[in-house]
Image (cartoon, helix red, strand yellow):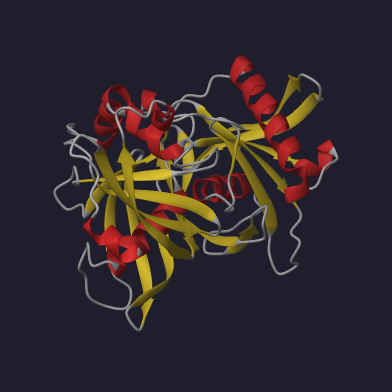
Length: 345
């Protein structure tokens, strides 16, 4: 009986968007492969701005329920905006648009190599990606025509605020740092707040992460040295001891509108590398491995240091693994008003 579905097609007035879904260390990534109109802009930030102002209904339809969920994450692939770039990208989530995403870089590297979208030879092909914060160089480590591990060299990452305090409603005074790894994060030691970085504390992490983020935004200016579009606090990262003694530590990132990253957060571990280097806790070339809330890992090491505006910055290299989870064809029925997207958490 089901073989009759081969002949079924949606009505011509339904908008169809196709995606390939992946995950990196448990964190989802929905990659849009067809169904988008042309996205004008000379830079990735201009393209992202155009999408935000003109196509945000697509973000809501794919990230929110009933097609997505509160913690869904997406990537738009564009033509490169540089003469030597392989492709461009920007990112979607429940609240809007992020400035950088490390788990997406790891997944996209495998995606473009393993699907043949970008054809490059060798066991470690280099991919040049135009992203919101600038050029990202990534690599795929391949065995038997399969990308086993992806690496990306991030933008200059630096410390904005160190050893600051802020009064947080319902918590009291907390000690925090703010560092940038393609996005700005506030770092807070979870042991000082009396809870563990485990799935059972999920709701509490969201609540505290939001309150800390809002308190810092209310009292401190978060300014990128060159781009106004990057000048905001993206999330709160709680840090703690690893569950596996072979690892350096554990990260839990609460970002956007209460999303919890299932991975250790690629841009977050980049910012942590900058923070540890700033505090003389991490030397150039020494890798560390960081766990997520579910125990998955990413590794990071500092490749070099450089001056970025007035900040002493590091160039981090982050690595991790990703997997394909599905291929999807989503329909947007113009008469389905609930299907335009709703958000519950």
